Structure formats: C-alpha cells, structure tokens
Image (tube, rainbow, N blue to C red; front, side):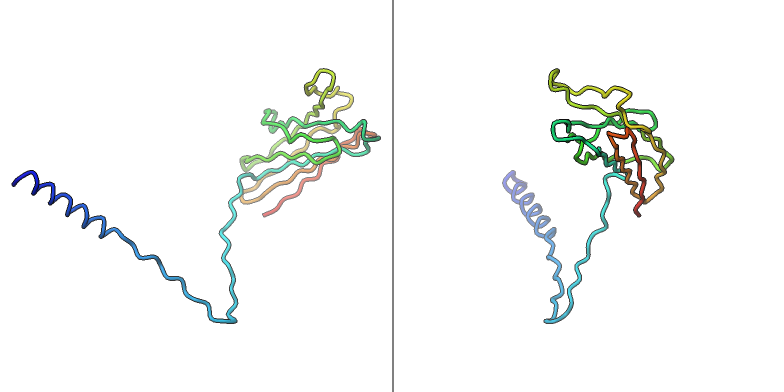
Length: 163
C-alpha cells in the first residue's frame, strides 16, 4: 500500500470511532400543567464537623472594645485561630475532627495598637475556665459557643450537636 492510502485509511477509522462516541442527551420528562414540582436537593457534604463561636460581654464602652481573636487548641495541639473581630463581635473557627472525645482550650489575643501586633492577654484576663470537653460522633456536627463576661472574668461554654 502507498503512504497516501494508509493515511486515508487511518483518517477514516478515526472519523468512524469519533462518530460512534457521540451520546444522545437524555430527555427529561415534561411536567403537566398544575403538576407539583419538587426539586431533589443533593445530600449536603459538610467540610467540617466542629464549629466554635466566641464573643465577649460586658465591655464598658466602644473605646475598650478591642480587636481580638482566640487561639484554638484541640487535645493540647495548636490547630489555628478564630476569625478576627471586636471583642463584642462573634468570632468563628471550623475544623474536621476525628470521631472521639476532645479537649478544647482557648487563649485570647488582642491587638496592641502601640506595638501594631497581636499579643496574648495576661493570664489574669484570660477566660476562666478556658477549656471544655466535647464528643464528636459519626454523622454529627458539634457547635461550641463560648461567651466571656469581661467584667466577671468568667466564661460559659455551651455544647450542642446536630445530626
């Protein structure tokens, strides 16, 4: 066979194989007028199974409401920090944790405007208690909320679960 014939043969085979791969789009059934339509929502996959929400109460006034965040320790390992906001604003942290009993410890940091950086709050002004134990079971979402009363220097933790 000549080179031209081989090339023509290869092109024909390629063309036939490409045409054979075409798929016909699936027709969706039409709804009759007045027929109820119920969309099917895909199952939501969570990227995290633990959420922390923190904020402070009893701040004397706007001048004392500093920018802050909380360092987050799970099982005594530093795994990150909350979002940054005023002490009176909610700050969030989310993580995917193993199914087990966990220890959460928080450490408060505030913006030192003179040094232009965040510094750890003195131990006497850290929330007390600064820890809580919680359990994560398969298929559950755990939300821990910590409200710190600055005037009383007392933190209250609330643990809630959602399936």
